[in-house]
Length: 179
Image 1 (cartoon, rainbow, N blue to C red):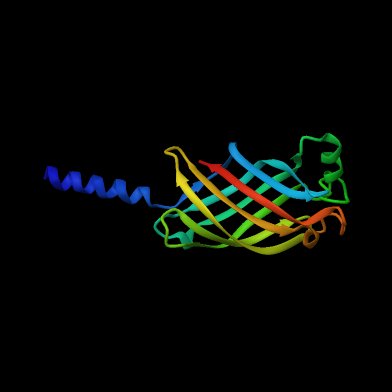
Image 2: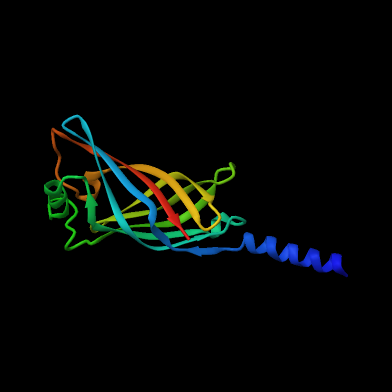
């Protein structure tokens, strides 16, 4: 009887580890970083104030989903004048479009433990484009850390105009802590 009870508790505990979990992205421990070449020099910045949900199901990754926004007004490039310019209508138009949204349409495993491919939509301003990129997910005991990155063409999203001094390509690095 004791062995049966122990086995039942063990199976229940194991099953709960793999049940779908709904997580909330945390600002502490998360970093949304971008890099663009400006006058042949890498210039970067960060965005914060993440909101949304991340649903993960390690047993069935196809059941997992992401729907997260980041606050455009938090843009920080270590230059107040540049930050103000990026927030205005020439670029992000933060007053009219206060958030950038990323939402998954499919999460698929790669075959390597903790490694996945994100398929979804990125919305900046009023433009939504499909994006795909690899990412990793790892538990730290209290939550999960998601790491990934992708490139985008800023002109596809109406961010500024064509420029001889500023690249069109932007690299985005994501480190999201959620619990």
